[in-house]
Image (tube, rainbow, N blue to C red; front, side, top):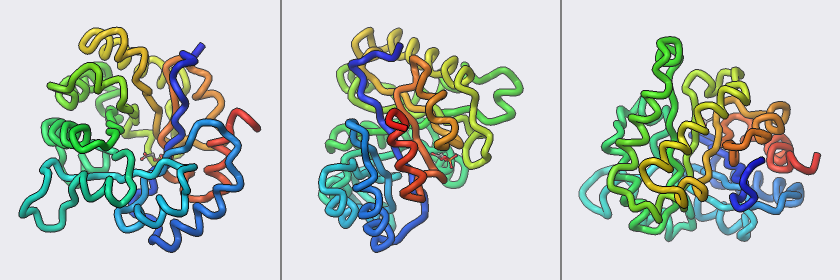
Length: 253
Ligand code: PGA
């Protein structure tokens, strides 16, 4: 059984899809379809945050997909946490594998961003996950532990409980090849044990660990039946309001 004290988080990650107008139209279609008690999360492009937050009317938690680690400064093209919160963002995805891979973000940079997000009142959603090669070489546990150690370095235990982690195996993202519920559970259980060892029992009991990678209305129930899967991070299937609502309402259907 999942700990009843941990609220389920169904989060969408739109990546580089949808203008502000498209985002508002999506939200207007999604709102009447929502049946779950726990608020869904939606990470939208920067330019859609303000209008999305307004349209969501506090019924969807709106967030961003990235930020810089500095409070402010001469960093052309970058965005600060304070700009995101003022626009209406409540959370921020950090360390997504696409940012690690295409924009060369490493654990130390992600760690600095994470601390900045916490300092500036944004809830971090930290992504970790192994590649297909790392899994084949049986390095999954080692890779996840290194990512968690380096990304969470110096974060206070009482802050850990409030944040979100998403286990996203790189080989499962956008591939239609979701990890099996058992595979995800195995890694997420290990992740929670790591949090307990390093940040204490309370933080481990409180932190929500999501699974991400080819989540669909077809596999959501099975994934969510696992004790250490507290929610999901959904890419492709979050782009259509009908499909995303089926994932959000998985307990009702
Ligand atoms: P996917 O993406 O659901 O399209 O596999 C998940 C993610 O990248 O967060």
